[in-house]
Image (cartoon, rainbow, N blue to C red; front, side, top):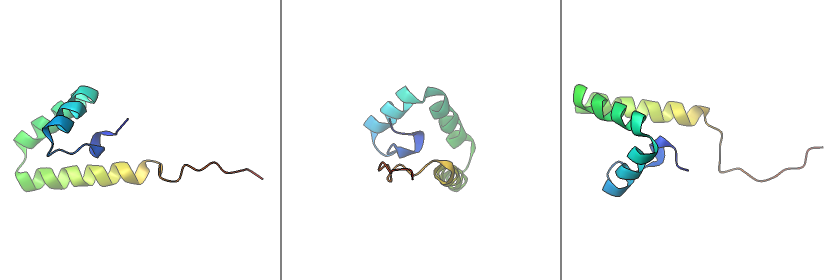
Length: 68
């Protein structure tokens, strides 16, 4: 399953899918976008993405390794 930040916000279909999977978080970001200026909102979202990805495990390196 995709995380909240993996969805393409420019795609209506992906926005619907994101809203279906993360309704509370989606509502939060919708409300936030209405309250902040465009550049403030974009900076906030980018900072949240960077924060999320810095703490999430790297999923591209999922090869099994033997423990010696």
